[in-house]
Image (cartoon, rainbow, N blue to C red):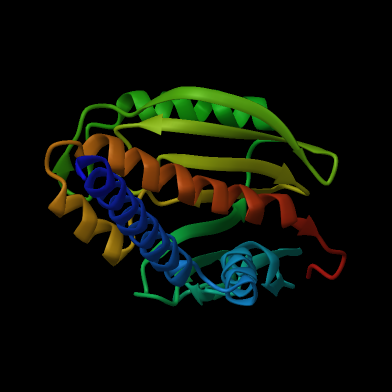
Length: 224
């Protein structure tokens, strides 16, 4: 008699376990995105890099491709073509800038030496006292087979990552302004314990975005 009860109890337990496992598997499968939806999400995440808008600056003779979620705004009233801001459509944050100006230097090495001297003498920025900015790393690259310099800066407000190139007596600087998007600033406030790591992660992401813009930078022949 006891053996029959034990057998029946064992069968009931097995059935309950099978039903429970089946329900859990169904829930997990239900929460998984459909293959088509997952593909759409992956494609959407790639749009930031694959869908671009071409910007041409005929006055200073260059063109760039910017991601579809950014737009160009001029940054100078007196000479609009000399300074442009690349602004996020999401919240109008000017993440990147390109400046073009007449250069008194013939090559990037002499410009860099002069730039380092200026940084060492800088003790304020827009009326705010700062420690003298310093170049913490630099890398030689080539844009249209012309030597350029990519540098990381410390203590430089609104510009901690830039690339400079000289062509035809003009200096071009392409920079990340060190800013964060509005939602990124919100996340930074919510995570007070590891703000530095989070800020670095966001800034690294924007530096990758700028690198893709730099890779698309090309000189064109119709400069006035």
